[in-house]
Length: 515
Image (cartoon, rainbow, N blue to C red):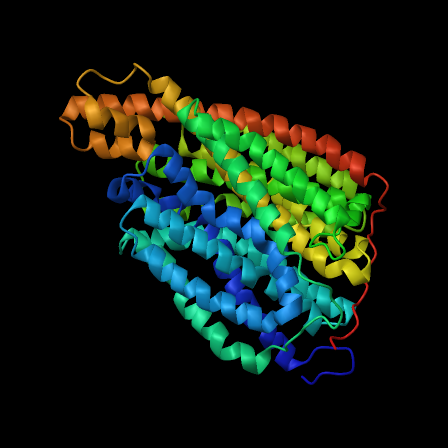
């Protein structure tokens, strides 16, 4: 297959495959630790707050730096930035795999987030530079979006397979051969691209964007899990003030990182909102589901990971139905309906107990995922087609930031809500004989409780498991109610923001070739 003017040829399609591989790894890295939590709890003994940071530090830094790194790639070259990020990601993966304390693992996850932020926008930007024909680019973007969903599904499964044979750090080594392949193939198959026109880099805006996210999330998580803490209480308003400073900077800077004018386009702002809420709901409850299968139902990582594939049947059906109806039903109706289906999944989650049949939580997870992913299949096209062609790059980076931030907030806030209920339910409720360090470990996390129970005499261990598993499901119920209220509100918001759009959205406008 040879390229014709304006159309991609064999080299571009092989290059697309090279770009999809690191995208898959980056998405998998968000969920690959889900089934490793019990092992990390046993080996590194993290506190409840540290456990949440281990899970979501990667996604927070990834989300906070995507727009910054996208702007940097325009200046130094997107292929060069991709290769720098691939090198950094491989090195950070080795550090994470060899971490021997919770603090070291959190730091390694932070480095993974920074490196990932250089890779993700580079992959999407290079796809846009390689495919100028609208139909071909739509296929390429569809493949890229499909890889995001596949990574979210395969991450926990890959983690489960590795944990069944190796130590918990092995889940990070998946990235090494992929990043090595990227470094070898990128100079041969991928074009370099630098924006021919750009202003000075908004370093202050980059600092403010990250400085706003971390203290805000730190404060919310710490207050929810550990109760009152002066530093955490001060971090919340500090994060909000820094967020306001970032917005002010973007409005007044000559060359801002983020064009706030994009948010005045209703289709764009609606698609961004839908992405954020959908990922919040889906990723936030994936953590609960994985822990429930292992720590409540007592499954091995491999068994739990394989059972976790069952909800993907609903996801596949939702994607197919959404694609079939996209040209016939207005986006507002489809997105609102998807959120209502997701709300049904949350409602089922409120009925899950420690002794419930396995089918209940799998059905609930499947309904939840089907509804949320069904809405997201419509948003990529809306983001691309609603933004002016000259701003399509920053529009795509903003969309990805929303996806990553929604994932991070879901894990952090729903996880914090569940952890807070878990701890409050165990206050004074632990069986007699569980005291001191054992009691503190059991109250911190369910993983800690399972470890302690294994070291106690028969009936005492069984009583501890029964008590803590009930407390965990109580926390799951509260988090499900929070999610239910959120997606019901999102259903109304999606309909309001999208009701002006026709059933068939216009095709993306092709960008001019790179200079």
